[in-house]
Each structure stands twice: as structure tokens, then as C-alpha cells.
Image (cartoon, one colour):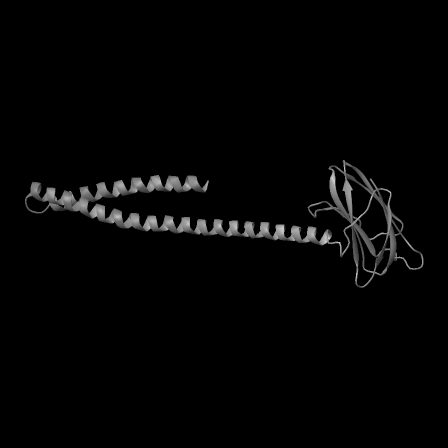
Length: 212
């Protein structure tokens, strides 16, 4: 719509310039025609009117061209700003995703491979508040997760979370706080690497079993 308005304005302004030029020529002929020799002065009036019309058209055209260029520059600045924001957001998203993947696959913080039917024991404390386990699905299917605690030294209820991420670090499932035992199944549409994260705001031991 904005482009249509600009095009219509340009066409209208061109008509105005022609009207101004013709008007100046006619006005010059009328004014000079009333002075001295009518025919000779009328011819001079035509020339003077045409010259005045051209000058005024140049001045008016310069103002309009400046206005249009300012508008284009403003639009260009806005577009550049939007593009810069999108590029920055894309880079930030990529950096965040890369950092998450690196964090998930860091074996010093977890990233422990776990096979279907296998049970692993974990211990969350002040130095290790999260464990990450790597699941390798050879085909699409359901990933079943079971987490239990030890009554004496286990994680307390309502302070733990189990999250599932894909290979890109995108969250597929977030459990929310739960009461032990925790049993959950998530349907995975694609084969590949997935991560199961167990984290807690409290200290204690747990056992994780997965089936897929």
C-alpha cells in the first residue's frame, strides 16, 4: 500500500510540474503582452515564463526528491535495524543451542550412555545438581522413564525434575516437580540421540531406568 501511495504521489507531482510550467509561460505572455509592442513583448513573456517555470520546477523537484530520499533512508535504516536484530537473535539462538548441546554431552556433568532396560544410580549434591544420560534410539518409538529414590538417602518428593531433550538441545518433555516413583513415557517420532536430564534442588540418591 505504501508503494502504491508513493507511485501515485510521483505521478501527481509530475502533473503539477507540467501545470506549473505551462501556467508560468501563459502568465509571462499575459504580463509582458500588456507592455509596449504586444507581439514582441509577448514572445519575451513566453521565454521569461518558461524560464521561471523551469526554475521553480527545479526547486520544487529538489525539495520533493530530498523528501523521498529521506523517506527511503529512514526505511533503509529501519530495515537494516530489523535485519541486524534478526541476525543477532539467530546468532544468540545458535550460541545458546550450541552451549546447551555442549553442556548436555559433557561427560563430566553427565552424558552417560544408558541402554534400554538398564538401571543406573545417581547422586545429586551441592557440587552436582544435575545428571544427564544419553539415549540412542535406532528407530522411532516410545521412551519410558522410571525414577525411584532411596527411602533413607534418596531425593525428597516434590523437589526433582526429569527433562528430555533432542540432539539439538530442544526440550521435548519437562516433568515439573513430582513425587517418587516417577514413571513417564514420551513418544519419539525420529531415531537418533536424546538426552534424559535428572535434576533437583535437594540432595540425595536415585535410580534411573529407561526402556525403548
